[in-house]
Image 1 (cartoon, helix red, strand yellow):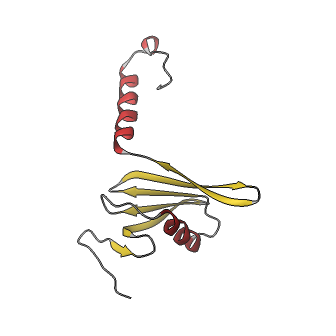
Image 2: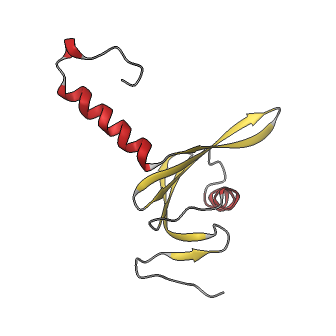
Image 3: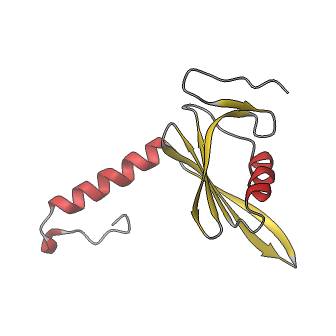
Length: 117
């Protein structure tokens, strides 16, 4: 097996179909997969590798370039496990940060009653 390594230290994975940096345990049933910037992985590949690393994994978070990219989480439906995905994007994260910053700058009585807050 040939290992293709890049300058940033990431390695190519045929299972994940991307360049990855590391796997980290962040809880009893949760893992984080750090990817090189502008990389995304194959969902089924990430689930397969995560189950090898942690057989009872429930949550897999992928980060690309340090930012959250996707969250995979396991659900059970009719006695079968089903994996779902939440996609994050940089625009959404920037809007969330902007809303948080706006809220922190307002005195309490001036905070608008808005579902974004």
